Length: 279
Image (cartoon, rainbow, N blue to C red; front, side):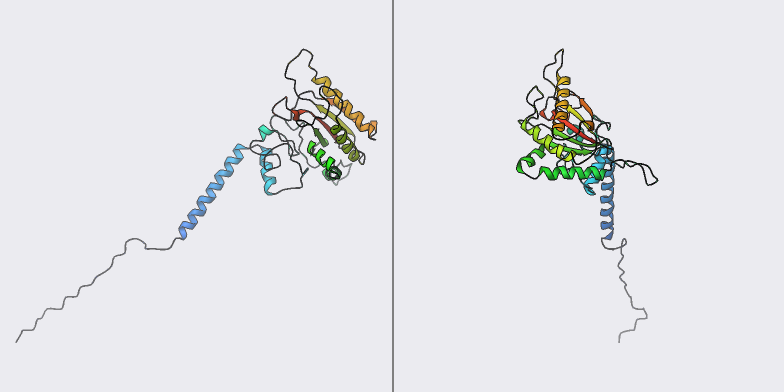
């Protein structure tokens, strides 16, 4: 008979040791991705603020929060923001937002409130009234196919001085006969269109003419006389279309100064600016 053992039974316990905190899901990855995206957007914004001018930033703001356009035709720039882009210093945009460093706001004055407030006093011609003239000009220009094509030669902008209506030439479509102040049929149509709108207003008028540079520098540069003659011819054409001579306040020849195109001899620099001055 086997002897009974007094030893207690051996019990072996196996414990599983867990290293670390275990799996808690991937929510932290989503939060981290949002943080990285926000930081990237922040640094992009800081770069844009450093790499652009005030006018370019205004163009970016207007792109995401557009206001009433001055003209359905671009103001001279080739960017997506109505003439303002990072490269607008090279394209010289012509619009009401201001100017580039090469052409300060003495010419491209920014549009804004004018006149006195509600406390009293006379109030200057408002931007809304000038905008109404622009819409009337565009409406009359769309009445026929011929005048619709003529609108391609018109750029408008509202400045501190008033409503600037710029008539400009294109390659193969000049405003005046070469080296003269004789208007072409295109110029005649454009002046008739502007006169029909200006006739309904009472604003005084200022006229300025620009011509391209000549390829050869001569002792008696003719650009001054040419621009002055063309400005005077435009004044006479407006008067022939029914505008009173008393409304003509200034006739200026700018020669080849203040070009609209980087190439000083470009056809685009041949232009006439008719300004309906603020009252």
